Image (tube, rainbow, N blue to C red; front, side, top):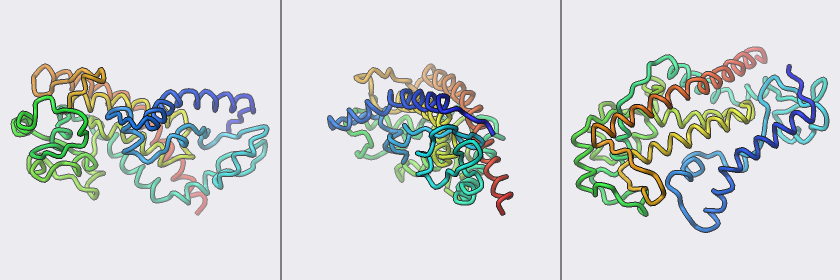
Amino acid sequence: MEVLSESEWTERRERHASRVRAWTRPHHERKARGEKHPVLDFLFSYYSHRPARLERWHPGPGVVLAGDADEYLRWSAYRRVDGGVALDVEGFAADRAATVAFTHRLLTATAARAPRLGCFGLHEWAMVYRTDRVRHEAWPLRLGHDGTDAVVEAQKVQCSHFDAFRFFTPPARPHNAVQPTRETQVDLEQPGCLHATMDLFKWAYKLDLATPSELVADCFDLALRVRELDMRASPYDLSALGYAPVPIETPEGRAEYVRHQSAFAAAATPLRAALIDITRTLLAASVTSA
């Protein structure tokens, strides 16, 4: 067990809060003004981790908070131990057994596969294929409806991520090389997928309080950068917001997309490994408690 003095853990907590408020404060300000941002608001609207929870700090398993740490006892997953307060790893593992087991299976299966690049972000195009209803109605389509449809029909759509595929329009689904389902998620997810990388944030907060908050923030930071590419490569024209398009309808745009996609897959590798380590710790604790 690592023991953190009160000054050490309060400093880490304050540093974490300061870091994430650079994301949460502008979100609150936009919301107060009634503004929607198609890039920056996504991680707060699509994912269920509220900004206030992102701002909270937790040390993760194997850490004792010394000094006056009784405030952490308001969470039932914490308990008193010799020298202070710590996460009750066995109790947490028992309460979240199903989530821990699924997260472990999904992340280890994904990590074992080589990244597949070259989907070119066509999932966003397939979400507006042959429909007048678009998800970001405030922003125009760069190529118009007909031009967007033509890109989907001219390219090979290869989306392996169920939570992206489920938003495809019905006419777009037959264009996809695979037909992902929730049941096949573990079999299909792969580390080159932008949505699989963004979802590291989801798995990090699904394991909160056992995920060190710095790791949650790292996953959020990467997800935000991935979301930017996701929308720059989308059919929407976001140039008024300062986002230059990645025109995946051209060879140059597709090459740029793959370069970014490869870099994000590499950046996700240590974060995914850290989350897998947490699931292993929790799985071992659940065996011990049983």
